Each structure stands twice: as structure tokens, then as C-alpha cells.
Length: 134
Length: 160
Image 1 (tube, rainbow over the protein chains, first blue to last red):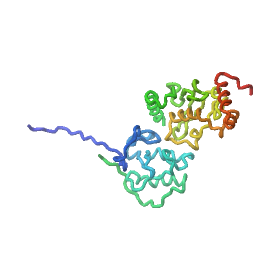
Image 2: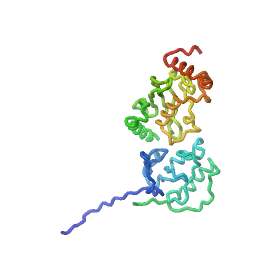
Image 3: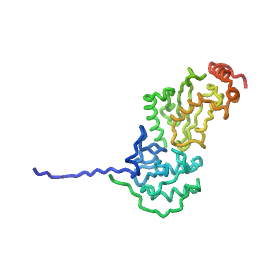
């Protein structure tokens, strides 16, 4: 039998490369939602239309993840005092995490204003932000 | 961020109908179909308190930048005798509802639950009703409960 392909529809899916995502057991009801807007990590923050590079996800030192736009807005408020909304530890981006690389400088600047103590000085990492196709 | 309110609405609906932990929350929903920024909740008085057997209405005003800012919430005016509630206005003194203590990790359901817990656990050190707070500080709980019951059953608070 001869099979002839006339058309091919490639379908791709992607998700943010979150370290430790595979082995951590999730509690009941603890979905992959941004703690601020309650939208899925792979979705967009409420101000964006398209998920992905335009609305990146970031991971805190405390292992709490947020859309960068959401956490920026929160840290920008005077009441945030530079703290993570989930655990109230000083919020800073986790080092050595691919999704964080392009955001580290931007968020560090914001944190300088709200909480000088959190500033890290090794800002030499400027890699292309990437997300992984699975 | 009103999309978050829509998500909360769906989750609240599901939680209240399925989770017995929240059976003291009789309702929590927007006051009308048109305005998602005004919510109303009815909670039942906690068991083993002077509030048991009575229901209480909470009124929410959700700011436009919620959840970055906390919702404004108060009891219906002239309905709740409690040392952390201003009886005449219904204003509630609870730290998680203040800007300085709020975090976006909390939601409307948390707020209602926290207020319900406050009913059972008055905090006399930050009172809005000094008389009731004094009775608690003096550990005269029977006088406190009698006074609360008196107001709840329509007793007069005297003229101001």
C-alpha cells in the first residue's frame, strides 16, 4: 500500500522551563497559577494579549513564580515593601534560572527603589531569554 | 485585573457548594450582575459565641487595582456589636484588610473567613468599641456576651 501525505499540520506546545517542576509534588488545588492574577503560568498577565516572550514568567529566590508584569506591579506599590506576596520574604530573582536571565536587571532596578538590601551586584548575565519546546 | 475577580467568582461558587470548611459562609457573590466591584456576603455567627443563631451581612467594595490593593469591606451598619467593629458604620478593624498587611495572595474568600474568625476571637487591644473591649479585658465574658446578645436582639444603644 502506498501512503501519500498530502498535508501535514505540525502542532507544538510549550511551557516555561521551571526548575524543579517535574519532581515537586503538588498539593491538592495548588495549580500552576500566578499568585497575583491567578492565571496559569503559561497564560498572560491581565494586561497582555499574547503569552510567551511578551509576558515572561519569573521565579523568585523563594521558589514562588509570577508573571513578571504582575510582580513588578506589586513591588511597585508602597505597601509591598519588596516582599514576596506568597511568603513575605524579600523578593529577588533566583540565579541560574533560564527564564529569569533577561529580567534580572529590570527587577533589580525596581528593588533598589523599594529595598536596597536585596540588590545583587553581579549583573553580568545577559543571556537570551528562552522557553523550551517540549 | 477584573479577570481575577471572575476567576474568584467561579472558585467561590465551587468552594461554597462543595467544601464543608466554609459552611459558615452562607453566600458570597457580586451584589448585582452589572457591577463586579461590589460584593455581598452573609455569614452565620460562630458556634459557642453570643453571635450564634444570627446572620451577618458583609459589604465589599473592590478597588480597580485589586488584588494589589485590599478590598474594602465592612459589616452592614448598626448590626454588629463587636469590640473590633464600629457599630454605627460597620467598619472593621482587622490587620489583613489594611494596606500595610495585605498581600495579593489573599482573596475575597480569605477575607470573609478571617472576619468570621474575628467574630469568635475579638481582639480587645485594638478596639473600635471600647465598652465591649473593656469587658473582655476585665475577663467579664458573661457581661460581654449578655451585652452583645442584648444589642443583637434589638436592644437600644442609647442616644449619641
